[in-house]
Image 1 (cartoon, helix red, strand yellow):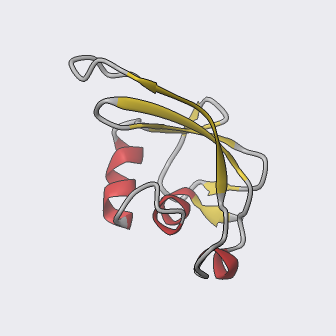
Image 2: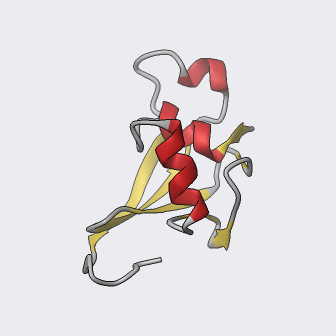
Length: 92
């Protein structure tokens, strides 16, 4: 298992870990449709929703081993759904 903020950074869904932490704090990231904290663990098979300003991405975690995620070329997740959202509303 790996912390969600670190997973988001290492899987390149978010550029910096601090941004991932901020996204979690405002509720823009959920694991298995539940609100979480930045230190919440994520593991293989979990469904993660990430709300960006103009789109919502739902992924399935494929890799949760930190040393493997640090290597280039590892596929960390698969996209289940991606849709555009109105930036004036909070999509999460």
